[in-house]
Length: 236
Image (cartoon, rainbow, N blue to C red; front, side, top):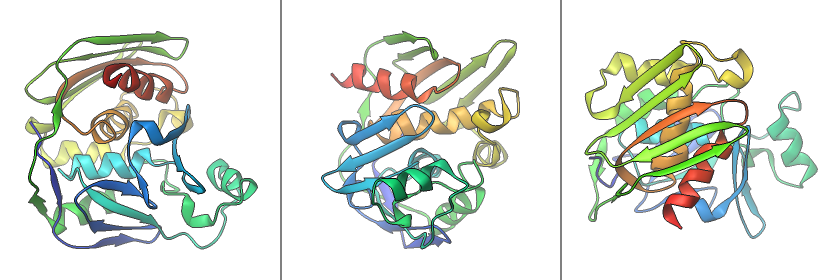
């Protein structure tokens, strides 16, 4: 079971900065499922006039590195209008730094490695456990969460399948998750299913402040409707 932990020092990549903190926030918005404003092909947060677009990759990176509490701030200073998230930010009157996700369509290997290098410091208190089975079936696929002593994720799409157990994963396997491209851009394959596992880490475990549990997901397009939907149902 993962414990509450923050990073030992500041980490920065070109598009965001991560600072030690006792809670998890993005652009000053608490990273909580109640602040999720969009969940389809990406996950956005909003609180008052503050917004954060495409947060799932950064949250997944943090959880992959064993970090559950941190303050994430966007650093982008120009709109990349080839990307939908920046077009949405500009249309909604938000600054470029409101967009948190990497342009690579991946969790981001660089960010993960910098977080691992910084190291983690344990914080008081415990994360929640998934203590009951919850299922959700939508046109976007099916998902099931179950109790477990570990953080486990199983992803299957047609004949392709992928299983990831955080506590047992090698560094090579964690990097595979951080490097995998999103199936939204590349389609579903053995190469992109690890990306879905990374999104599950961000959408369910990080946003839910969950330290253990098993997630089984059978995704189609816009699968964040499944991950956020089942988290809302679990925490209701």
